[in-house]
Image 1 (cartoon, protein in one colour):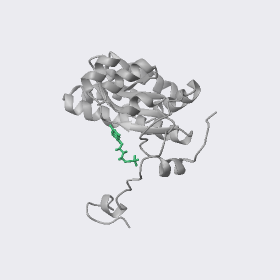
Image 2: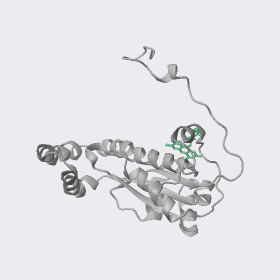
Image 3: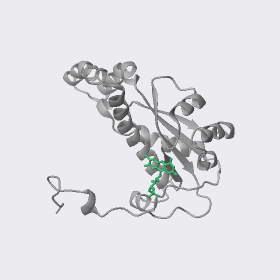
Length: 215
Ligand SMILES: Cc1cc2nc3c(=O)[nH]c(=O)nc-3n(C[C@H](O)[C@H](O)[C@H](O)COP(=O)(O)O)c2cc1C
């Protein structure tokens, strides 16, 4: 049963990038619920290239903090979800994806086409393109986790302030992994961050083509 403390609308409006956490442990069921929300995100070809390392032990949080420009919230949070993408995931998981898809009703014609088109598409990627592809897929899962946590009454902080190689070392990540973001989850300690506000819709949204206002 999902523990709902806020509606999605409230969670979106009230969420702040939490500056400091009180460190209380997070119940395992809640953590699994939050993670599961991320695993339900859509992904290119349903290849689910995300991989997550959940850090909760004080020792490991301390090491992760050192790999994250000494950001205190890494050590204070109840859990830090280290969101990674696996550049080789699709090679290993293509058959699994198709098998699951078939169970859910994937048409055989689509499965046959995906068998070749997935590898044709992804095998041609440069490492920069692969990082871009991983970033967009993994961040969608992170966003779902973040909002589920907020709906459940937790506070969150997404972070890109970390050193790729150092996080690799601390978590003993395989070479094919690309660290996309950290998501700290817990309960706010002290005052929340100010609300930095958002640009007007007319500044960032167009209708039909660039430069035309959305009516
Ligand atoms: C991809 C991403 C990376 C971020 N990295 C950090 C970070 O390393 N440290 C930090 O304190 N805040 C980080 N933030 C939080 C942003 O500064 C924050 O979301 C932004 O200022 C807007 O504030 P709000 O989220 O409270 O509305 C990050 C946010 C995003 C989405």
